Image 1 (cartoon, one colour):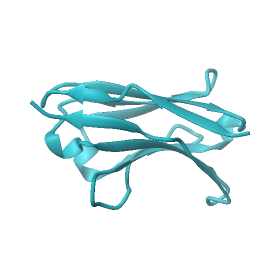
Image 2 (tube, one colour):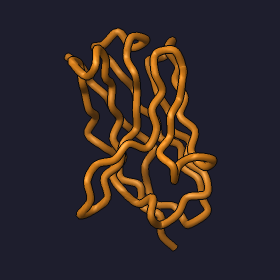
Image 3 (tube, rainbow, N blue to C red):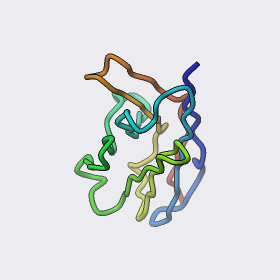
Length: 117
């Protein structure tokens, strides 16, 4: 079956960095767009960054210049490097894999990121 397993979340001080990683199995990884989403308490889930099968990236405005998404098709992993973290980045971060206009759409369990002093 399809599995997306996130890792790398935790508690970090404002201005700090974290690197999230998502390991995928059960899919033809290089056929999927991979994305990171987040959901803060009381808010809707929102897109943070996405990288398509060709390596093209797109970022939510607040992530531009601070976050970098990357993928390793040989290892079936996608990473999100987060720098200059702010308290408003606090959320559960989810890995997503989708293909064929979301006919195939899979989610990880999420990893908590807390930015606090």
